[in-house]
Length: 88
Image (cartoon, rainbow, N blue to C red; front, top):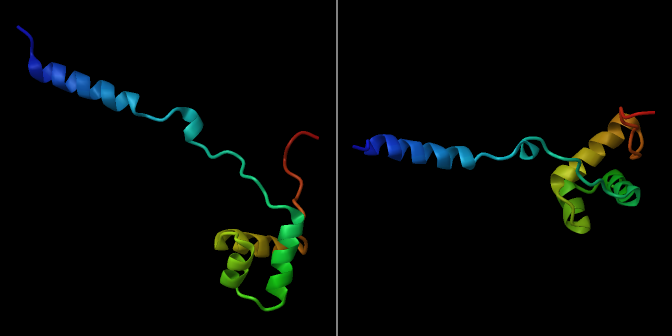
């Protein structure tokens, strides 16, 4: 005689384990960076006393990106990408 509860939980367990994401989805990949000209335009608009939302709507860039560009400019004094920790 077959135990139906066992088969039900066994089938349910298979569906749950198959639904897990592969390891490549766990970490985010490298995102595309904006061109330096666009970053310079963001800084220029920021210096001319425009708000983040106004800059965002003008350039069609998310506000969070505008904030990160401004933060990088304030920290380094430039919008150039800093060298990474890769191989030399």
